[in-house]
Length: 437
Image (cartoon, rainbow, N blue to C red; front, side, top):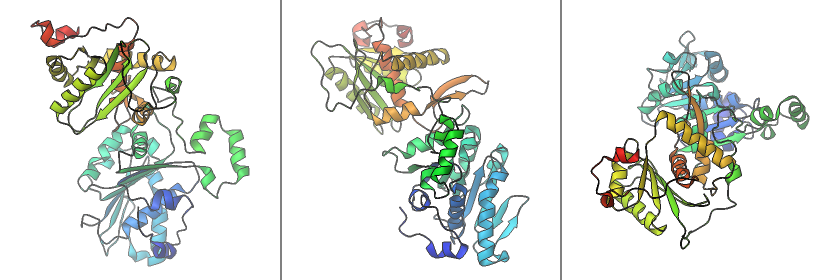
């Protein structure tokens, strides 16, 4: 958190922060800050002060001149922040304190070289070709994944911090904003911060005005527009997974004598997470989840081998697509009972749909593991370039626990084969791909 606020500068430019802005915006120093906000609570006003703080620096943290990227769905939206900051600057320090080019939408401090450039998401070409030291995004729920992905390289060279804000909504072509928000709620992601700002935190909204809006808006609209809470039921894949939640997480679970277990496993190497989810074969109740990353593959194999042995020599069901193919073969060579599952574009949506139904109808039960719940919330529909819908984690987020859960579900379904394959015991020279069919 920031140790001191620029109170003298705020007094000079005439900025008076809303009560929520100091704890949830101005004192935060995480590189990626994400705010979901109600409407008319001073969001753009606070972002203008963030822009002023960045433009008042003599140099950026990397020692080079400041260059702030200001992105919004349209140029008109960027002007809400840009114009207010320009008014503060020129009123406090004179018109000559800033050079502007309103045709190209930039302004520059002639003394320090600090520059702000506005870019618009309705023109994807406008967001490329820059190298920013800082970035601010407004109305981010209306900036598509395509534009966001084009914008990210402008931040990468200088490791630019990115402050974003918008109404909590999501569509199949815009998922990155929710991804950033969920990452900000994850204690394991210290570079991310996120918060929600409702009308109850703003003195601009009286109880009478709030009651009036509640009478006029639908429940979904009130939750989203007035409380700043996610109401993106159209975009989420797993909408009613709460039906399948067990009351609490069981610490240090142990296997039952004579019980058959299955382990759904999403394999990864190094930076990505490997996730193993254990369930009782007969009941579909998930009893344990183990998750790790930054691990050498050989250690991953050993951990899975020990886990399978602990749970009564459980069957391990793995995604054998891509890197999973050689990794599943290695597990078989270690004597582990493994059932590889090949995932295609068609079978993927069938697997996702089957899991969705199983959760809603309590055919499987899961413990409220925070990592799993975050990923269930962030697993959304996406639009493909051909216009079809598929399902993945929100842009930039993880889905490791989701695929471990899908693999686990495949092993617990009624009629699911339990025997698995062991490469050493089989003694067959057929390829692993043929065995999986």
